[in-house]
Image (cartoon, rainbow, N blue to C red; front, side, top):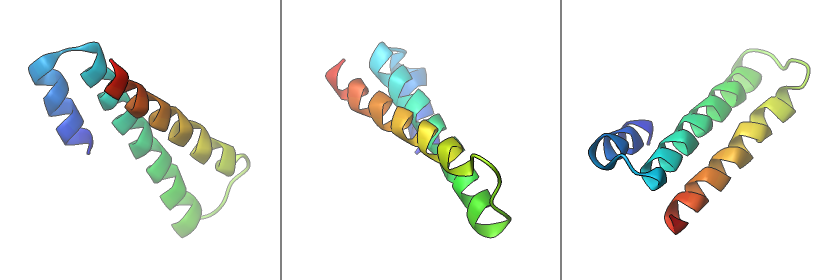
Length: 67
């Protein structure tokens, strides 16, 4: 998803594709933290650190459709 969003941003360079790319990056961050929690060990505030970029990513990706 990140590669596709990045490719779209490289081609179009619009606000919408930039927000989609930012959302994809935030989903990558969220999934990385989730994997660390699941397969390594849980750490303080790990749930907040997982959900904050997840919800921000959903917002950016949703807003990218309205721009």
